[in-house]
Image (tube, rainbow, N blue to C red; front, side):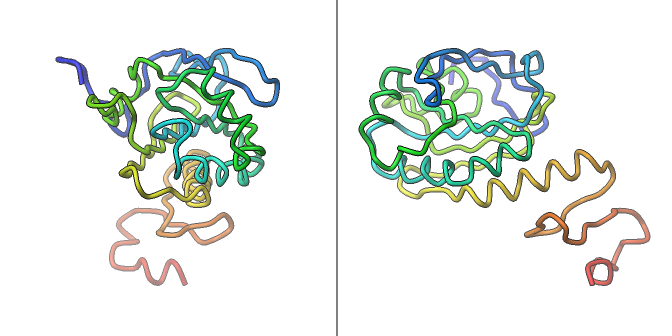
Length: 202
């Protein structure tokens, strides 16, 4: 972390930033724009992983690939991110069979600028921790999960969180209880709900 550099907190807006990216569907490189001024107003799921050509990482990206259509159905884009280059991304996707179904963009935070803002950059080796960040269509950070190197994540839980955050965004004043899935009962916080949560969920 550079001196004086702030760490992004939940509820903060991402800075307007552009990351180089490799797009597997077109086999071309391009740019991913993030932040309030991004041209596409959509949910963005940033899936940071330590490095290309590693071991747990392809299992995670394959898991997100299996759920990719469900993320897109909610109007979200999944973006894999590491501090590798777009060229390494391309080579890895073309050589690792587990990644054969990955269709989402693979961004390169090669100088670690965004990883530092998320406080997941490892200054010792230039990699990032496993970090999943849900950014809403206004560029606001709504959820984050950070784990150490040796345990992979669960894309289905990230999808559940997205469903819940999309629901409360579209229904101001409501809240989702633990484990909430689309179609289940939700909560309307207020004085009348105090001490009556069990009744509201039955």
